[in-house]
Image (cartoon, one colour):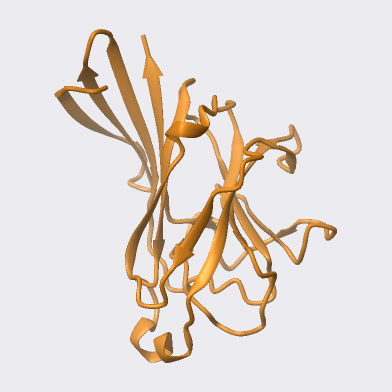
Length: 199
């Protein structure tokens, strides 16, 4: 579908914590891809102990179709120290509309996207959303859900942004019947969310 890259540009949006990248790709028609990168220091990785789902609010993406999301696993914190207790885990990608009061609304992606996370996996965990043909709303929550429910054991680590507590919203819940709670230890999941815009 996409043939070649015309240019790439990186622009800082907010003190190096949010970056917008633009790639122009050419085919029979012009396609633009924009990636929102949530970046920042982290001293406390998220292990999802006691939580079944964790989601972060995504804002300021241009209109388009969600192409991919990348999370970062087992990089921050004491991975080598804890990895002996890690186990292979199944996660499901979850995407929700954001209500005006910054709470999750209706689930957007109803098709289950299951990710098999190997206990030895370290680094980028990229999930393609292109085939779902999901048009992104202006604001939405995106995150992960444990397929086998919550656990009180540390099975893996998700990299987080731990600064900017007032700028980001990250929520967890124990199960599908529980209410959402603010996850203050993890200000935002470290993530890259890419949108494809066709002109």
